Image 1: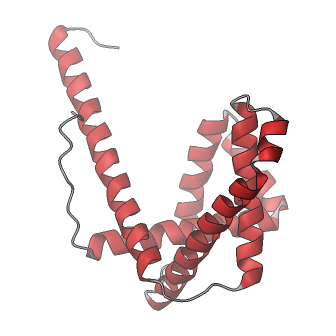
Image 2 (image 1 turned 180 degrees about the vertical axis):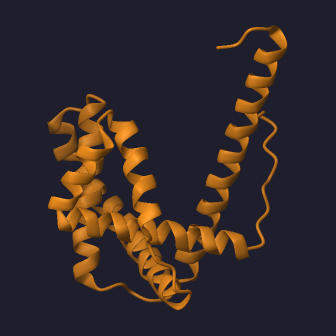
Length: 175
């Protein structure tokens, strides 16, 4: 709620600044993970690759179906979809393995505060009570482990961003 034109201007300027900072942060994180993937010169274990490929393929199919792509078209394109999912999976697994090694070396851990922040963000996003979500996570060890792993990867990327020399290219079409 704003009372004056000046308050509105201040609020809008603050929101624009936050959006730019978020875009820059996202760009920096993407640059770091792209550099990790490009520099990783090993082949990930097939079992990890297969599981990630299936997960990515499921997401691709679900996204396409939500957008109204008919199942027949998806079936026709299944070789291309699988190849795309396989490539993305290999890249993602490589990055995750490198991030896990970095997290271990740098002693990056998930603390209770990290989980609390995740629970509050996720509860707000899914419009449910944080207590209910926390209880569900307490009963689903695999999901909790996956979330903890994801949080460690995020913290490892943040660590790398803090140590990296990054450049943000100006894009004249963005304000």
